[in-house]
Length: 184
Figure 1 (cartoon, rainbow, N blue to C red):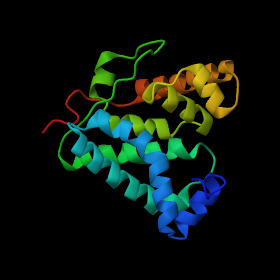
Figure 2 (cartoon, rainbow, N blue to C red):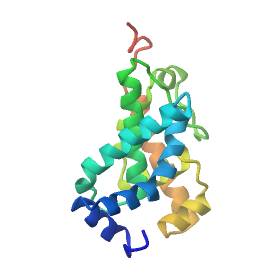
Figure 3 (cartoon, helix red, strand yellow):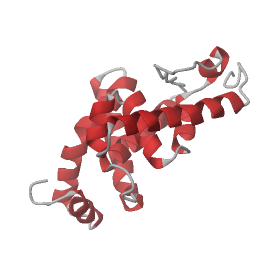
Figure 4 (tube, rainbow, N blue to C red):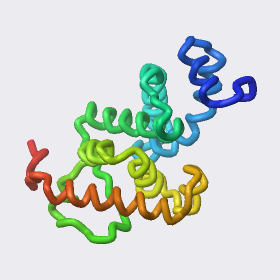
């Protein structure tokens, strides 16, 4: 990103189909996105295939990024969704377990909740709460790291995480789950 002063200039150059900018963008964001892909892939080759498909999706949707959250978080979300699409195409259903909930929900609900359903619920959260929840629950950042990344206090990070948990808990409890929802 040396010749691009900031992320906005890099994105603008990518949108102009500047190949050097696209390579710089890929080199900047691919390592963090690869971490996500490796969680869902059986080996490095599969992770790289998922990453490349996800990054292609990122470049195709780059014009839709609104600069309301972090660019890196947005890239990771798109790559995560691409990994879910990969599993969906293979007829596999990955599940995602969120740890450290203050008040657990009914076990049958969380066991029948698949990653794509949870992602839809997460996408409905207010932007900052969604970003904090994603960084904490999915990417494993602690509150100090989140506060530094988003430029606010650790207390603010904790508040947004608890707000996100509360909203998700309410959505989980209201969701009409059936134990055999995806059977067959």
